[in-house]
Length: 151
Image (cartoon, one colour):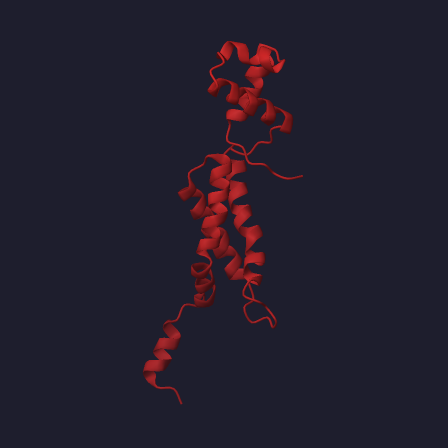
């Protein structure tokens, strides 16, 4: 028989206590994913960590902890699409998500290297075999925050 105090303690327990515990336990995972996106996009890591935490919360509320045979790593596999989804939806909705052709990224990197080596900016297009207009287009596209979205 339960005492009055234990019944009160049981009633005060959050209905989402197990889900909240999963979130707290896996916040380092969410921070790692957010840091990866921040590095790739230049977007503030703290903002992306908050979005990743929202993804964890959504995943934890839908996750069945009572399912037999679930390993501790199963939650990360389950939560990863939620975490990535929150971040990519935000980046897409805010206009930070574009895809730049690989050839353009390569040319931009080569141009940036030439600039670091002291080549005047006006000579970069000719050194890369490009018109001034194409170089301007490549530079503009590559200066935008980019997330590579594998196809």
